[in-house]
Length: 231
Image: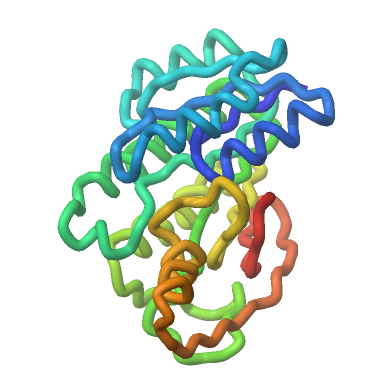
């Protein structure tokens, strides 16, 4: 199967690309290699699979409409895994337009590529941040999530609404994944695991609590909510 994976030099995206290649799929990876964190980490992740005979890497931005259109036209993926996005809740406070460009405009380009090229299924990354001001525990996909507390969260909620609309209008099967803290080797240096490790090494004390939520499966347009780990 030919699968397009966006964010393929990212933490989750590179792990997905590797797993798909291991099972025999052909993978087209897209990543813009931005400088949100050290690009050398992205290059190191990519080096694990960039020379695989079934892997093709495209250094393009989701916000570049013509480049995304060209990628779909040239490679004709059967399925798409959209993991590229501008991440980070705190970063969105000072850099809001980066989230509009990547997470909303860029996602619209992916949806259009899927619609216009007969993609069989789109899986995309949402976020636990969409729960925002909700105080109901445990979190559930059945809860109202209309009160995001950051532009990042708002952009991910917008992705869910956009995907649902494309499923309804064009019959495009979509599955959204509300990731909580994803951890593991090759993780992002701004994530909690690395920050907690630094605190431990410095001898600091802290308290933490985690809540996992239950996932469910819905027809056509699906949103899954899980606490996750990646290899």
